[in-house]
Image 1: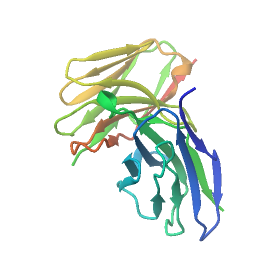
Image 2 (image 1 turned 90 degrees about the vertical axis):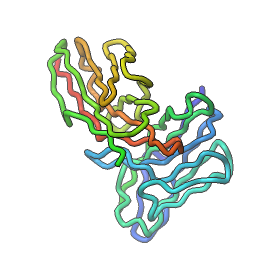
Image 3 (image 1 turned 180 degrees about the vertical axis):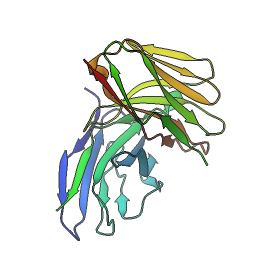
Image 4 (image 1 turned 45 degrees about the horizontal axis):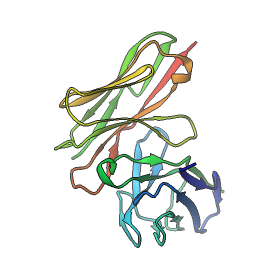
Length: 114
Length: 111
């Protein structure tokens, strides 16, 4: 079955700690995205990548970092510089071609601060 | 500024009571309007893409329509399992495959 997987489902971060959220897709999609969702707010774009070894900042990139070494994988690191990391994090991907702007989402990772 | 605004924020209906959700946008040169369904604690599930004014798409009890300024998601004779948050989104004009999302409408269908 093709799809997008995110792990872990829940993640706990201590003060001053960096944590990494995993996102993997086996849909052969070129573009991948990371969003943050807070209660009562829409999705806000953190980073996106249209091809391997290339990525761009979204609207709220401060305190986050990403890498795109493989087409299938787009991990997000929440650094200690992100002072309010508690949120629901969503990874998405989109196919090449005419449907390239349709984004398909993973199940999400909820990050909580201890 | 490119914006997508959804109304109402929350809507409670009785089972079988039809209604509509609104998504208005100020994105210039619209290249599509997307609707998603999101259940609590889960990722959004893609429902529809609309590309031009006058276009309609249907899926079970849901029908999405598009005008030049807004989109509606009509729900006919809803059931409790239709309860979810419905999100709409539009691509930003810069052509970077980025979407701007509305805040969502939280729909509750009471049995």
